[in-house]
Length: 324
Image (cartoon, rainbow, N blue to C red; front, side, top):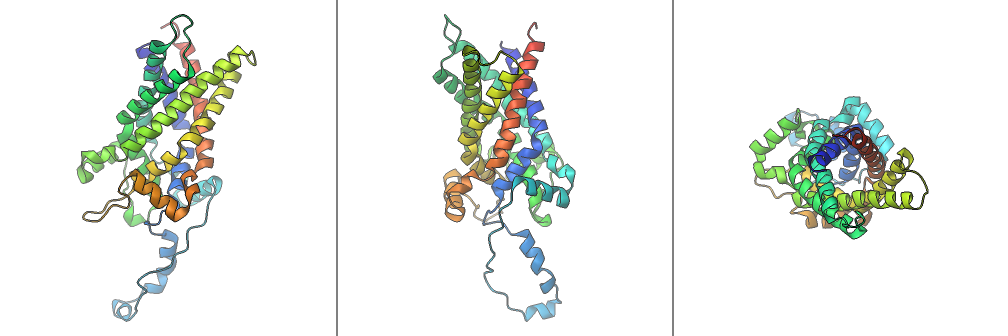
């Protein structure tokens, strides 16, 4: 297998990542919805005409020190998608797609290829089968290494996807993933490229272990019991089940990762979150425990198709490259 496993996994991951990118963008926007330290753009716009007075008149107006702003209403993935299209255009659904492609090239190529290498090394010598526990460990190792490699692209992707929800004056306006990485390095230092890397690694370990191990295990069970033959039907069934398992296992870490990566740190000011645990505690305290499952519907809506496209494409690529 060797290098071929990396090539096969990379091709399948790039196809799956690019084709499901709009769903991932909606998921990110939903996960950021309700953050208390961000201004409410709609509220600011609503009050702007009332205060659009001359400086002399404005000086006589005493504003309250604190303005009670009700929490933003909950939005579903479909209504959010329509809102993005209306306010930012259809192209906004593909904001950050260049970062997604780079991320899949770095992260998924590494994790998919390394998982295959470990499967071969740890398989039972007599049967060639890999017990479930070893599959999980292989997934944990492969996911962790892949995430460490791909974290810069992950940070750029989250920021590019989230940019459209900010007030115009606060947007970063990255032109591409290269521009994003360059600006982050110059303005925030090289270390910013690994912002949230601990979370990224933890999430990737959970996703890879649950996704790849459950796909292999479910596929083997279907074939052993003779429910279906080794074809598209088996691949789709096993991959959709694997996507559901991965979504349930990873969503809380995904929410925290998204918020930590997207936070804007002003010079001399205290960051909104001191770390992953602080982010989790503030999120639960302000929005409730179920906030950790924000974006779950788009997560499963994205994770399901992503995993199906990933493994169906992977199986087809393997057939094409079988004799190489």
